[in-house]
Image 1 (cartoon, rainbow, N blue to C red):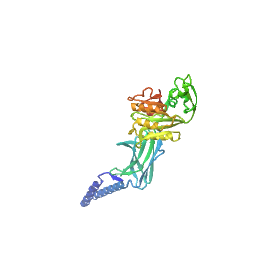
Image 2: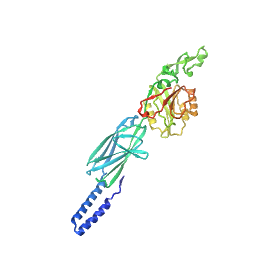
Image 3: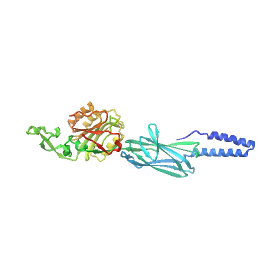
Image 4: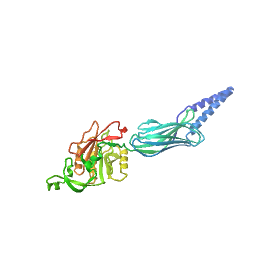
Length: 391
């Protein structure tokens, strides 16, 4: 698709034609020749402008189509002029549906989207390539394209534009933090402060009993054995590597940012009222090597706007969790409906909450969950590599 911008060359050629006629009529040869040369120049400029974008091609190449938050992705763009007519100037605007920073390129706003643009000069049968760099400073699925080329005559009197439908996608994963001390891994699996010693135990594999000690989870008490003993007894479980943790993420608070909480060697799942392609996120815990990439991709593409209530997501997840799975609930607020759903979940699974501290929101009441941690939201989170999660 091409389009001409209005110019005054046609009117100028009419005026020069009158000058030629007047010069010949009065015998002013110099004036007539000057007018004729002017008409020829205007005709050449019109021809130049009309055919400047013929046999001109635009190519874009991303070195990768998935990137981590903050990563720089090399980007190459090339314009080829496959004809004898040179291009004293040609500009391109490559549209970006999203917010990406392009180094060594000018960014212009286009309503809800952006475009990066450059102006080049290309000779006959020449290919000009520019190497740029995309800084992935915002998670999400970013789409590049279409491209609008513009060129014209050497003096800029007449401009031709052309749209080229070449598209690419770049998926930027959310930022992943290193958890600061004491972190969350030792506290999640059995839900209390002493769980570090039993982090690799499976509560479904009982191998014996021992005396109850302060800090032991009440669910680990074997009430039948205790009834036959003068002391309280808790179950001793067999160590296992098949750990399962389900993350429940509430995106209803605008400032909420998701921290990385996946214990190493554990099967991890993710449930959230945030939607991907209109559907709430639901990934049951799995130890598949692709699980982390799948979860990060869902978080990258997630929209916080959905119809499902977070309490309903907790209820849905409860029905999909295998016995022995620990639940981690991440939220900026814990309303009554969420607390009731967590209380029901706690009857079958250890529940740890991570509250994202902002100006609004409240923490869960005492006794609803096994352990509550806090992460403070800060505006400079993109520049940080460590996220402090503490009691």
